[in-house]
Image (cartoon, rainbow, N blue to C red):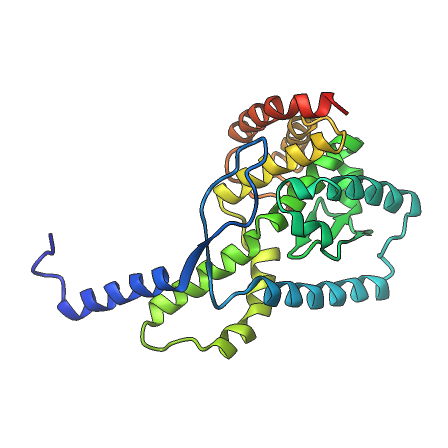
Length: 274
């Protein structure tokens, strides 16, 4: 029921906004559900193609790696780099379970000698792991696999593209008649991707999916999926209970560990087959 006091013009603007958001995004199937059963519908804007976002990610990654090399923090510890790359490669060998095309991505992983508990994977498989994450949390191989698997999962599910799509669709709705052209959208991808990757936290649904897929990737790669739980226990004690930057604070640590236990139990048979 429409209240008589609601301005008719404002109502029209609101409806146009909703229509712009709805029309701007279409349902896509980024991954298979896997043993953990990830099957949420995702909506992506036609203004944000997978190829365009990957191209922007590649450019930004190259710039970040060049800067790290210039600063002398790129792949400093050869043993640490070898360890990270060995684990990552085993995880990458399992991505076909969720999306076969990802096996052909131009995967790349570097270790940044920075004292931060952080890691990330950009669209298309460009990965960075910070030495501070490994050293401050004293991660086992199983726990490191949980971290990297989680970040790979974000890329497989195209969570960055989903968030950028949502932002652009919302802006289209808010601006209504000031339509965003394709060229304008492309020019915004760089700033939007940086914001999504390095500033904004992932949504609860994105984090849950990355946890679930990451646990399964680890199990299939021969790493104990229960390590995701011990990883969170370590993170709780880091910095007075604040989790590292590579994970959102939502859902809560206790809720997350409970969900991880359920996921780990589901994929234990996969781990035990290795």
